[in-house]
Every structure is written in structure tokens, then in C-alpha cells.
Image (cartoon, rainbow, N blue to C red):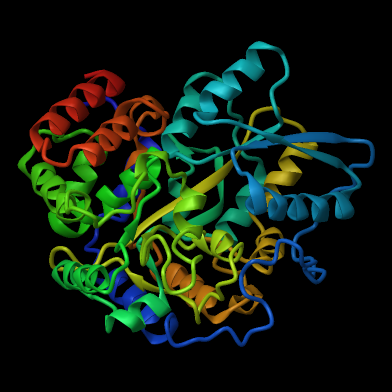
Length: 462
């Protein structure tokens, strides 16, 4: 059992250690109200990487920084990176500073370590895991946020979103980007041809999958080449089936991965992953973007009818001819147990090189101004409660954003992102590798549990 833990992360979980039923009702209700009803009649379809956002009215005062230069590192690629660069461009316009985006690789802590060892750390890093924030603090890399950034956080974020950016009693992270990771996207034409309806429970999902299969289309596309997609599958099943208390305990390794609750969740996952021809071929060689696009290309005979992942899948959907809300629809991850799961993720800005310019950028990223720029471009959700829902480019995304904010502190953060990166965030290792092996052989539940526990014990220092 783990004997030490991240104080800030624990504080967040203490505050959020309520039942997820209220949040699930909010999210499921909001999504059911509109996600599949809204069509593609908005001018923007959520893939606005090539659109210029309207100028955002300033709500935060920033210093003049003419001549200052900054580097921001993140693992984002494609449209996600392109859209974030427009946010940085807005900061440049307001301050006179020059900001360079530095493409990073997973695991980002290793990438940053090499940059720091070489004497060239970025000024700010966008860290996708609370565990990575803790590591950056423990290594002496991360710098606390200043008064102006703290002021923006207090005004714009719920306590839970503030707390997961803390280590001890100090604030290090600004959660700039959030994700609703409890969604399943589907090809509307495939469902129509199959006579399928949106499922609300796991058993109904299995029935729907069989109907899609019987219509001649493989039910699921899975991006198994990237282990994080598989951890997300597991977390939704586990949270709904085992409940929030067990979820919190497993996230902190207070119970072992050999626990019967993990066996039950893996056995449930195998009802899809282990069903012959339910998962599109080549899943372990399919990356996340391809898992999405192959669900919405090929007319009414795509490679698969459904793909599980978060709201950010919209960015990839819009690379096809499919329109979000018309051709590509979405439903909440079905309830496996008593309640539908509500799993969130996010990326936090953390200062590595302290300066007036770095603090100003962190302050900007904590303001509604920065989030509004990217919200207009689509494929993005902000945990900033003062971003107007009208900034989002379509009804699908507006309802997702409203549900996220309405949930307040009643959410569970991505479990693997809370773990040490060696276990929960490293390609080819730990949880990522164990679940990839399980996708390859879903019958080996006990062996998968033993491997997960051995890797977790090593990473947590038990």
C-alpha cells in the first residue's frame, strides 16, 4: 500500500468524494437533451482550425512584455496544436512577447528532463497528469503561481479544479484544458441501417453492438496503439461498476490491482474486447486519430460503427466529411453499475522558468480570454466556469461544456493521470502496456491483474 501521496491531489479527492450520481444525472441529462438532436446547421462544425476566432474582449490585464521570449512545451499535435497556437498569438498581440510552441513527446516528464539537463527548459509545460505535476515539483522544476494567476483561478475555477493543480499547500498548475472522457461517438447512418438506438446501460450497449454487427459493420473501433485510450475504457467501466470510493482507492493504490473489483471490470471489458469481430481489425496498430476517422469514412460501410473517446474526438471527426450532430452523433458512456460514469481529464500549465512573462502567460491561461479563443475553434472544453457557452461553435459542444461546469466538483479525474507516470503514462510500460496485452488476449484476466499490480507496486514505491 502506498505510504505517501500527493497532498493536493488527495485534497481534491476529499472534496470530490461525493457520489457521482448527481453529476452523472447532470451530464446524461444535458447530453440526452441535445447531443443527438442537434444537426449540422450551425455555421461552425467544431473543426475550426482554419477559422480565425473573433477578437476576444479582454477581461484580464496583462503587462507589456516587448522583447520578452517564452517557450511552451506540450504533447499536442495536429489541429489541437494549431488551435493552441492561436491562443499564444493572442497573448503575443496583447503583450508584445514572442511565444514559441515546443512539440514534446510522451512521457513529457522524460522529455522535460532531457531539456533541463541540456540547460534549455521551456518556460511553461502543459502537463497532462496530476502525477506529472507532483514529479515536476519533487524534482525542483516547477515554480508556484504568482498572485495574479491565483486571483484568476479563484475567480474562474471550482475548488476541485484548483486543488488538482496543487502540491501540498501551493498552487502549481492552471488546468487550461478539460475533457469529458465518458462519451461514445457513432456513425448515424450505421445505426439507422441497423435499426439501433442509443444505449443507456452496458447490456443495452452489447445489444446495440450485436445489431450493428448483424447489419454487416464491425461494432467498435479501438485505438489500441496508444495505451491511454485503453485506460480510459477501463476507468469508465470501473467507476460505474465499482463506484467512486473504490475508484479513489485504486487511483492511490490503496487497494491492489488484484482486487476482485478489478477482475470484475476486466471481465466486463472482455465482453466487447474479447467478442469475435466486435473490434475492428488491427486495433493494436491503430492510433487514436485513425480510430476516429475510420468510423466516419466509407459511407454506410465504415470500418466500425462506434468509437469510444472524449469530446476532443470532434477534431478528428471534422477531418472527414462527417458533420458533428448529423452524421457523427454521441451518447454518454452507458451505466455498467448503478450510475453512468463521469470521468474527466485535463492539461495544466506549469511554470518551469519563473519570470514576469511566464507568470503573465499562466495568468492569461487562467482567464476566460484564453479559453474563449480556443473554444471558438472547436474540439476543446474549458473547466473555466466564466467562459460563455456561446463561445463554443455548435450545440453539441455547448451542451458538453455546460454539463462539465454544472458538475462542479462532482467528477473523477482520469485514474491513470493520477498515477506515477511510470505506471499510468508511459508508452510500452505499466498500465498502458498491460491493457494493450489484455486487448490482445482478453481471456487472461488474472495474468493482467498480476502484471498491473507488479507494475503499480514498483511505480508507487510500495
